Length: 128
Image 1 (tube, rainbow, N blue to C red):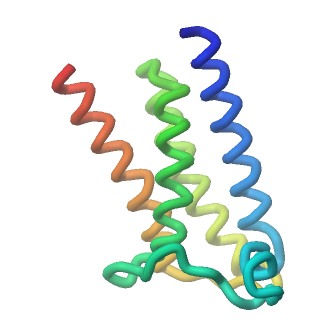
Image 2: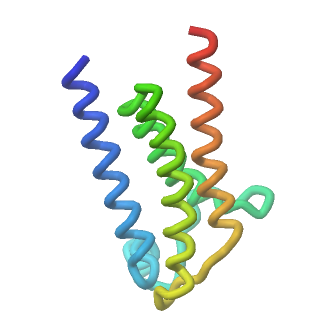
């Protein structure tokens, strides 16, 4: 169990650093990989209710690994607060990064990704 927890923490931190790098890169790395164009963004699925699905998936995946790695009550609370602040700060950086722009739909996608995992985990813990 200890090895699994260390592995989950490693994956969480790797995804966290990767997500920060992708957010702060001027242009879209995935657009370059898929379309050979830094200005295009590939869509995993279409956006829902004016909320960015790509951002939802990114923060949901990050939140899943974070919650699995940090289930201690004190660390869990810090993790959720960290994920919310990270989503705000990274999106605000888009005001100053060339080829990027702040969008509320992206911020809502970030929040919804974190909130979804937060509520699902709390429901799971309640019925254990």
